[in-house]
Length: 327
Ligand SMILES: [Zn+2]
Ligand SMILES: [Zn+2]
Image (cartoon, rainbow, N blue to C red; front, top):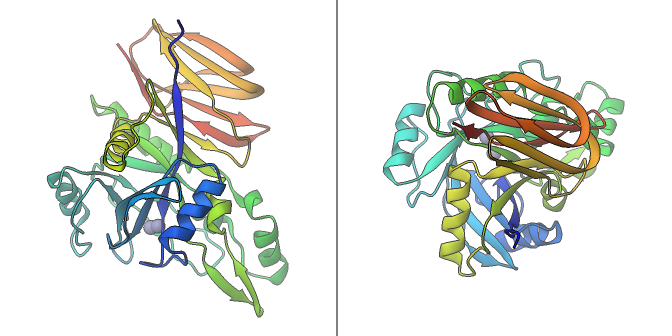
């Protein structure tokens, strides 16, 4: 009999009313349910105040975005007590580990060339090794490309907001590949929505930039399991967090196309199966070893190492896998 696989979609990096988001937990969970998500992780700035549990049919997990004012934001997961941001990055990375948790460097390479007033918040010292990397952040991507120098550009940025999205920064991918090259373990990646549902007034017109439901239909992390996820909250949470810690998630931009990509490895062959012809790239430590247009690929591995996959659909960044270790 064929082994059955189970897929669970989730969004990471969400802000609620406990920091600079506008929604409460019930509204956020409801929006996630409507967007077809099974789980979400709410990471308020310097806060662990929000409740967690199964809410409106969605598994809601709490984390903290450790947020110094100007740099080095860190998404801390699996921690019990709030960790101070008022120290250097290595100290809070260690504090997260001391609580049995783990974390992801958030939006590490926001652009210096923004044409708006939002200051980029970067990971300033790349020699400090985080447990994982948020390789793509939807809201940062939009803010990096949001031009507010005239009213037409502002209107475009709201009406066609998804057109501003460019995909992960190349320097972030390079950093992540290097981290993996220099480690025997998998340094995992996530895609974060950084959802705030911010309400702003521009020329007296109130606009919500990326309402929660809209955000939740964009960057999604799909966890694949060999068995059904447990029903009760604590077990569910443990399985989801362990999956992210191990890099057992695929990052997909569902705004391009919503599907479950089949990516697996058997006997030193990587199998990829998609519903549509796409540009599939396979990388080994950041070097391209395959680049083709297809909807399915069987790639034989001759050299051991860590491999990862990037897929573009109609030129748009679509799917990013975590590294797969091949001996
Ligand atoms: Zn941040
Ligand atoms: Zn954030």
